[in-house]
Length: 63
Image (cartoon, rainbow, N blue to C red; front, side):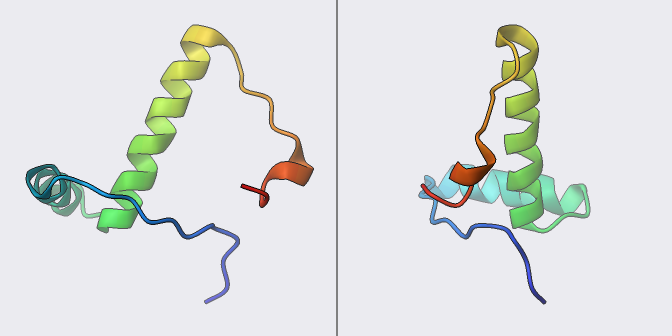
């Protein structure tokens, strides 16, 4: 399946990763979907407190 999502490698302490995996299972999400959900919540909270983060569309795939 084609996707426009960027693959990353994230390091976690084993206990934290296990806990997030348990939460994902309880929420009927994959670990990846749970991490994406948590990241989105983080961005929404940040933007609510600090204003919208503007992104130049031409920079989306240039990390």
